[in-house]
Each structure stands twice: as C-alpha cells, then as structure tokens.
Image 1 (tube, rainbow, N blue to C red):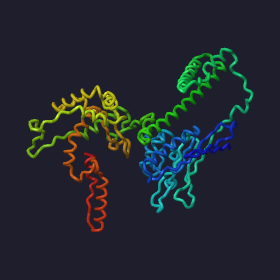
Image 2 (image 1 turned 90 degrees about the vertical axis):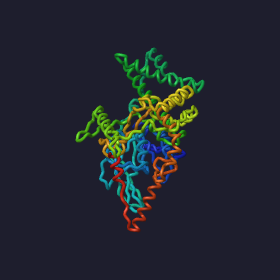
Image 3 (image 1 turned 30 degrees about the vertical axis):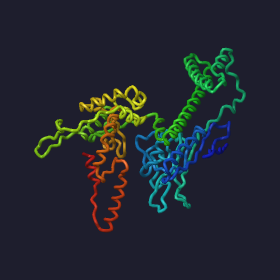
Image 4 (image 1 turned 30 degrees about the horizontal axis):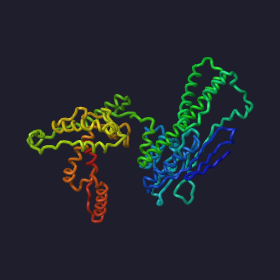
Length: 495
C-alpha cells in the first residue's frame, strides 16, 4: 500500500497511499487527543498550535480523528459549510472553539451521516448518566467517506470505537504507459520563451531570492494570460498552459498554508490564544437567512433590515414616566451643581493609550488605530471638543447614530428574539465616555450596594450563585420555600 510513518517532536504522521507511480492517491492521517475539561487555556492553545504544525507538515489531503473532548451538539443552519444537520446533545465552549477551528481547516464528517440517537454518542461518564459525542473525524474531502458509524463493542473503556469507511476514485498515472515521451517544444523561439519564464532565481542574497520568486510568479501568471489569448492553440501551447496552471496552483496553496501558519503563530505570541487568528483568517461572514414577522418569514435583505429595525424601535421606545400629580419629570437646568472641572490634555492622552486595537469603527469610520497613531496632532483638538461638550451640554448629532450588528445566540435563527444587538458607536465618543467614566467611577462605586455584583471589579455573580446554592441547601433541610425569580428576568427582557 505504500504506507509511510514520519515521527516529529510532538506528533507522528502516518501516510497511507497506493504504490508510487501506479496511483496518484496520498492521504495523511493525524490522530488527535485533546486536553480534558480540567485543562487550562494555555494547554488548549498549545494543542491547537501543535495541531496546525502537524497539518503544515502533512499531505494536502489529510484526516483528523480522535478524542477532541468537545461537544459540538446539533449544528446550526449557518454552519452548513462545515457541518450537516446531524448531531448529538448541546454545544459547550470547547465545542465552539472546535467549530471555529473547523471553519478554517476542515469539515466535521460525523455530521454528514444520519444515525439514531443511541448510535451517535461515543463516550459515557463512569456512572453512565451522561453520554456525549466527542470522538470526531475531520477532513477537507468528506466526499470520500462512505459511512461513519459507532461500534457497540463491549470492552473496558468509557469510549466506543468509531469506524470510517473511505473509498478512493483511483486514476492510473499515464507515465506508466508513456515512458518514452517526445519533446513537445521543438522551435528555437519556443525554447527561448520557455527558458525566459522558467529560469532559476539568483542566489546572491535572501532579499534577492524573495524578490525574484515574487516576480517569477507574476511572470508565470502573465505568461498564462498571454497563452490563453492565443488562437488557435497548438499542442505545445496547451501543454504549457496546463503546466502553468499546476505550478501557479502549487504556489497559491503553499502561500495560503504559510499565511495560515504565520497568522496563528503571530496571534499566539501576541495574545496567547488563537481566537483572533481564526477571526482574521475567515474569508466570509454569514448573513441572516430570514426573520419572522407574525406568521410570515422574510428572506429579502431589505425586508430583514425593516423587521429588525421595527423590533428594536418598539423594544427601546422611550416611555415618559409621570409622578403622582400626572406631570412629567424633567431634570431642571436651574439646579445648581458644583462647577465641572475642565478636561486636561493629560486625561485625553491617558485615555487614548487604553484604546484597544482591532475594534470595529463607528458610523464615521474612525478607528482606534487612527486616534493612537495621530495622537500628537489630535490631542489638543479633542481636548477642546470635549470641554465644549461639558460646557454646552450638547454632543455631536453623529454620536447619536450607530451601526447595529446582530449576534445570533441560540434557538430559532428566524426569530429576532434569539439575536443580541451590538451598537458600533464612534471611537471618539467612546474616548470621551471613558474619560467621564473615570471621573465619576469612585463616586458611583462608593454608592453601590453589596448585593450588586454584575459588571463590577472584584465582584462576581458566581458569589450570588454560591449564596443561592447555600440557601437552597438550607431550605431543603429546614423545609423552607424559595421564590423563583427567573420569570421576572424574562419579563423584563420581553418588555
């Protein structure tokens, strides 16, 4: 079969292919064992970093299989490029991380085959109370898989084996039947043209090699473009066009592979994670397929925007509250407040340094990178603008506008309630808000009650959850009742 095993520091590659020269089929199989649920974030990032290194050293056709320790659950409709609609259970955080990895590299082949629920799970807990599908097969070529099934074999393990059936469409190589090939380039003009576009790069320095390589690839594309315009095409021209297509495709695959590896490595060094790397490597973003309005589902993009706009207008509609006399409460401008100190240039400089890079801009298109790069020029003008706003109490009208992005959470993707809106406000507005927030934070924080734990430093809602668990345990032993507050939260969101 032509099997070959390559051993590296952190992984082993097993190449399975037919006899070299007879068939042109090659395949790399990479066995995976991901860190368990108790693993820390650094171990998980190191695992995916090592996995990407293994993929770079493998053949272009490869299979990733093994224990991923991740639950992908039932796939969502917008993930049709990576999965099919067959799955098991609910998705966890590790499963979402695996989906982001598969969106760049592979397809999850287990989801391509419909099986009964009892034949999908691959792992059970020691008490057999919980069952999950965590042993998965990933590949770029799902079409070669005829079946993936879970074997119900009794042996001392908490995993069930997964068997994949693969079928290759073999194509015999023509070199076996044509060992004595004739030269297709016979004219002196053709020989000189061929040598011109296929000459070897100079080896004077690394910089010259890189420049020459880029020029040679561009020259190959130009040469292919010229030959495609030639009419009629001789046998020699057709052979050269075919060779150019293969060579250019090889360069493109190699470039994309290096780009993927370098991007992931860059973000791991900078941030210690791969989330931003996968976000940068994504080539497209999915659009909402449809939204319901009453009993009708709109799929037209303009109608979808209208449905979403109307929903959030009604949700965030400002209702005027009245007092007991039926009169509307307004903040009187005549109330005497202590004078507001002017914003100093040092405050603007300090706030500018805290701006994060890579954030989406608002409707004005000004990014945080622009404010940080040109801070020396803009600081004085921004300080004047912010002080003018403090003195007049009026903000630019553009600050009242924002681009709203809908983030899908869970449930029916056609129901607008299952999306969460994120407003992209101008970067200058966020800069001004951070300065004001820094000023008022000590006063506001001092007036916060102890029971307020959300969105506060050194506080966590986990403390309240722990308190509720203690109350539940105490109430069960003392026969007391606890009122459920969940419906109240749902009603607050609905209204």
